Image (cartoon, rainbow, N blue to C red; front, side, top):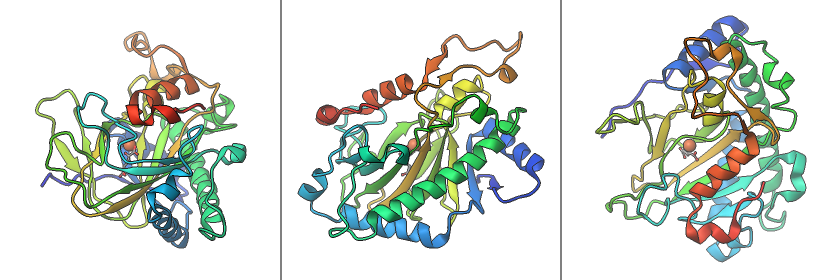
Amino acid sequence: MSKAIQLPIIDLSSEDRVSTANSIRQACLDLGFFYLVNHGVEEELLKKVFEQSKKFFSLPVEEKKKFAVKNHRGYTEMYDEKLDNSLKAKGDSKEGFYVGTLAENHQNQWPSEEDLPSWRSTMEAYYEKVLSAGMKLISLVALALNLDEDFFQKLGALNEPMAFLRLLHYPGDVDSSREGVYGASAHSDYGMLTLLLTDGVPGLQVCREKSKQPQVWEDVPSMSGAFIVNIGDMMERWTNCLFRSTMHRVMLTGEERYSVAFFVEPNKDCIVECLESCCSESCPPRYRFPPIRSSDYLEERFRLAATASAENHRINI
Ligand SMILES: O=C(O)CCC(=O)C(=O)O
Ligand SMILES: [Fe+2]
C-alpha cells in the first residue's frame, strides 16, 4: 500500500475570490492537484453519467467498435493507448469513449436513442455543466497568477475551447502481476486543466518528483461529489513551470473501476508561450518550452500515446 496524500479543497462557490485564488495558487505551486467542491454540477447528473457510461461499456465489443474513434471522438479499445510510451507493455489496460466540443457536435459519435436512451442528452448536459465549472475555475486560476480574471478569454484561448469529455473503464479481471501493466501508465495531462470524477474505487496515484529515484507514488483518495482537478502541461508552459503539471497513473487493483475525465484545452490556434507575469530577468522563459500552437502540441502528444493497434484511427483535430 502507498501512502495516501491529502489534497487541498477549493470551494468554487466561495464569494471570497481573492482568498480562493490564493488557495489555488498555493495548490498549483505545490502539486497542481486539488479537490473542487460546490462546482455546480448536481449529484444527480454525476450519478447519471456513471450509469450511462456503464451501459455503454457493457455492450459487446463488436457493438462498441462501431463507434471506433474518428477525429478523436468515439470509442478507444483496450491497449489503444500507452500514456508512458517508454514501457514495453502492449498498452494501457483501459477502454474509453471521447466526446469532443459540442460546438462541432456533428463530429461526435452517439449511440442511438433506441439502443441507449438518454445517453446523448446525459453526456451533453454533463459536458456543458463541467465546461462551465471549468471556465469559472480558469478565471480564478488567472487571478491566482496575478492576471485579470478574464485574461485567458481576452487572449482568445477560450472562445472555442477544445474540451474533451472522456469516459474511462478499467476492467477488474486484468492480470496486473506482469511488469508494466497499468490502467493508465505514468503521464502528465496535456492541456490547461483536467476535472476528474471517479467512482470511489482506488487506483489513482501521483508522483511528486519524477526525477527522484526510486520514484515515490502516493494514493489520491476520491472525495464523494468533488472533482479531482489537476494542472496540465500547457498551463505549466504558460506559467514557466510555476504551476505544476504532476505525473500520475492508475493502478489496477482487481476491482473494476470507472472514471470520467474532462480535459480543458485552449482553442486550436492559441499560441501557448511563457506569460509575462511568470518570467523575469532572474527567471527567463525556459528554453525547452518555445511558443507552440495548441493543436500542434496536442496532436503530437496524442500521436506519441497511440499504440500500433490504434494507428488506423489516428487522431486528427
Ligand atoms: O482514471 C483516472 O482516475 C485518471 C485518468 C487519467 O489520468 C487520464 O485519463 O489522463
Ligand atoms: Fe491523466
